[in-house]
Length: 128
Image 1 (spheres, rainbow, N blue to C red):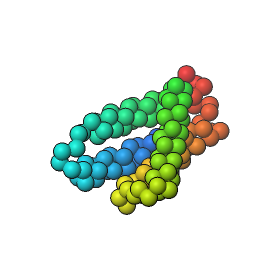
Image 2 (image 1 turned 180 degrees about the horizontal axis):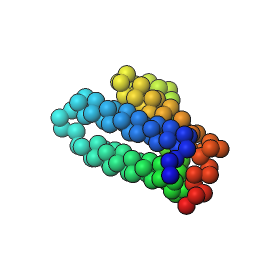
Image 3 (image 1 turned 60 degrees about the vertical axis):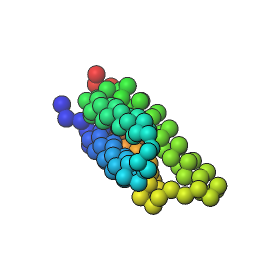
Image 4 (image 1 turned 60 degrees about the horizontal axis):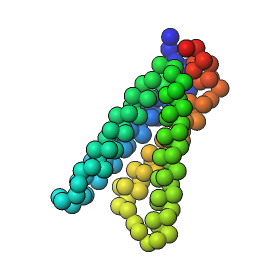
């Protein structure tokens, strides 16, 4: 059975958000001092792999995957936007690539969540 268009769109948006996250990680790694610990990068990569796994489960119609992606994605967007706003208010600046990547990733996540919850997608998650 083929998933409905909103679910397929959500899947593609989640994968695009992961790609943006990978690019931002590579740029961050290139800009980091040589003595920086790679712990944050490793944790970030693990999270991205888990997101891909959940996106695949979402495409297969697993209701738990939609819930997990909605909660984790919502939290990610909240942390990203608040982090940028709070840091700007304190005079802290991030690199342009990091800021643009964070905002792009947040926009992709919001679109993916909204797409996964459209009326056409709801029946897909009840078919199981």
